Every structure is written in structure tokens, then in C-alpha cells.
Amino acid sequence: MTVKIAIIGGTGVYDPNILENIHEEQLETEYGRTLVKIGEYKGKKVAFMARHGADHSVPPHLVNYRANIAGLKQLGVKNIFATAAVGSLNQSMKAEDFVFVDQFLDFTKVRKHTFFEGGENGVVHLDVTDPYCPELRRLLMEVSGNLGLTAHNGGTYVCTEGPRFETPAEIRMFARLGGDLVGMTSVPEVVLAREVQMCYATICMVTNYAAGIAEYKLSHQEVVEVMSKNVANLRRLIMETIES
Ligand code: HPA
Image (cartoon, rainbow, N blue to C red):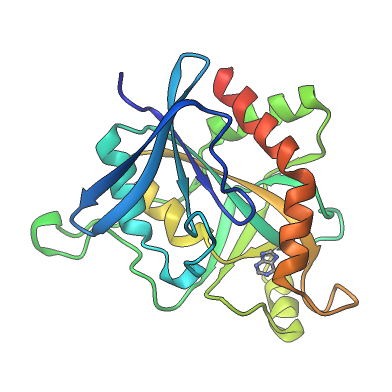
């Protein structure tokens, strides 16, 4: 049985134990090595990757996004559910809300962001009119409605380089540009997944209002605490969507 579905767990989502018969595989790709856990859920094979490593040891700007996506492609993955802790710039998107984003603004700086660097792979200019898969978003909205979760259909994810949080001036700029949420990982992950024809959705969970909107200083600890309060809902949402 090939593995058609993958979960990429972001901050606070390190535990694949909802899956049965889990084994770990090391995947060799032309971009480097990556680790994946493969298990079963209701008869479907599902791959799980912890984006920052199982112990959150890899910062967002140093994640080997190309090895991760190339590795999942090798397994035969067609659909990816990625999770992301995000800050909110939008008063209607509150802590613990889920947002299935549909657009991004890319403010990353030093990342390898394409499989197509000329040479053997050639040069490709990818269409990103719909960077995030509308069909997975529709399914996620349906399931979150059934589960009674607060979820938003669409939103613009501003991807920063990190690992620092933003200045209030940056957040004011992002808000003027139309950003709703800010995080550090969705780009280039979504772009690479699309370059190899995968259907990719990011499930954002708001953990805080962004710098300058929040009336206090941000901390990674706060992000992790809010994620851990809501991780059971996140897990139910992903697993029921996989089942449907
Ligand atoms: N900024 C960037 N990334 C984040 C934030 C934030 O406020 N919250 C969670 N991830």
C-alpha cells in the first residue's frame, strides 16, 4: 500500500501516536536526509513528519523543506495536511481559532525555495493562483463544522524569516498589505508541495495576537501553551478529515 496522505506537524504537534503500527523511516533524497514515521489510521497509511524535529531543535529558517517534500513525494504522498501555529493580525481571528489559509505573502529571505534551479530539473515558473488546495480546505471546513470548532475559510498567511518574532512596525505593514496571520514556515513548504503536484493545506491555529496588537511581549512558551490546550481538537480535525 502506498502512502497517499501526510501530516506535517508544526510547533506543538510532535506526536504521531494516533496512528497504529508506526515505524520510522529515514528517507534519502537529493536534497538530504529526512525522517518520517509511517502508520495506519482506519485502514489508510499515513506519514507523519515533525517539521522542527521531535524535540523542536530545528528553527524555521533551517528546516530542510526540500528534503521533507521530496521525501514525501518518494513515498507516493498526494495530500498533505500541514499544521502551523500563527499570530493573528485580524481581530476576528482569535486565539484557538482554526484558519485554513488560501493565500500567502512571502517575506522569507535565505531559504531554498524551489526544486527548479536549472540544470537537469530545468526552469519552471509555477502558477500559484491557488497555492493551498481548495478541495482539502472545503473538507476541513465541513469537518470543523461537524465538530463545532471555530474555523475560518481562507486568510492570508504572512511568512517571515524568523526565528525572531516581528516588530510592531512590521505587523502594521503586514496588516496594510492585507495579511491576516503571521508565521514562519508555510513558505516555501506550500510552494515545493505544489511544484511536485501535491495537494497541500495548512491548518493554522491562532496562538496569539501579533506583536503590538497583543498588549504584552510574545514568547515561544505562550505559543506552545495555547497549542497544547487545543491540540486534541487539531488532532480530531485532521483524523476525521482523513477518514472522510
Ligand atoms: N509571529 C510569528 N510566528 C508565530 C507567531 C507570531 O506572532 N505566533 C506563532 N507563530
